[in-house]
Amino acid sequence: MTDTVKSAASDIPAGDWIDRLMPAALKPYFRLARIDRPIGVWLLLFPCWWSVALAAPSWPDLWLFALFAIGALVMRGAGCTVNDIADRKFDAQVARTSARPIPSGAVSVPQAITFLCLQLLAGLIVLMQFNMFTVALGMSSLALVAVYPLMKRITYWPQLVLGLAFNWGALMGWAAVRGEIDASPLVLYAAGVLWTLGYDTIYAHQDKEDDVLIGLKSTALKFGEFTRPWLFGFYGGTTALMVVAGYLAHLAWPFYAVMALAAGCLAWQAASVDIANPKDCLAKFKSNRYFGWIVLAAVIAGQVAG
Image 1 (spheres, rainbow, N blue to C red):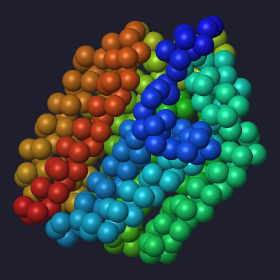
Image 2 (image 1 turned 60 degrees about the horizontal axis):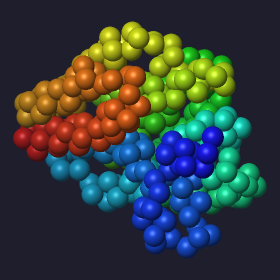
Image 3 (image 1 turned 180 degrees about the vertical axis):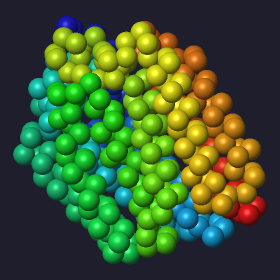
Image 4 (image 1 turned 90 degrees about the vertical axis):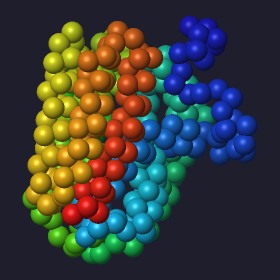
């Protein structure tokens, strides 16, 4: 494969702000942490913010919002680093990922491990700003982060493990406000897991041909041409469970009105995604940040009007 073709296929944007503004020595580390692609941060952050808003007596605590935003940025980067260390040999065989810092040689494995330790230290500093129950809850999520990169080797359901890890904030946000866990955040957590199963199945359709060649598994390969009904099932379950979480938290009627718009956003994804078109899959995957904002607006509206 020529360098031109590799560049066109790569998921690393050329000539962006990292290329223009960052010192050469730092560029591969920014790429490794996916700072240039913030959608992952949003997907990790929204369950935290939803949960903080769900637990709040009225308006959510903006200081908690800020702490979770910093934590999501750092821990998403750490997760990407763990994933890239574990998948470096596979990534080297896939056009979309072969130019990433580790398989391309821009960052060595020892350097990546050192960078990972620094990110985890930063995440620990943020975590220690919460109450001790939330600290313990946050620490308990590290096992999921560690095992996720291995799941695509042994099961067609790695997206389920990703959902369990990525939505842990649905528990932590409530705990940060109230110092305990109740039924509402548990239901919200389950909703988030289904949401992740939906959006990451769409994302995985980008790599299904390469995954078959190198022996990796995903829900995209599991469902194949039957992906669309699965998406409707996952997203329908997401919406239903979020409504239940709001009911358990005693949210007022505006929550349900705005959630109708959020449900429409997910239905549009499931109905219109072209699983044979990687660009469309990526666009639909990224559109979940709009869903995240709509749900947050629904929860806040329901609290303020209550």
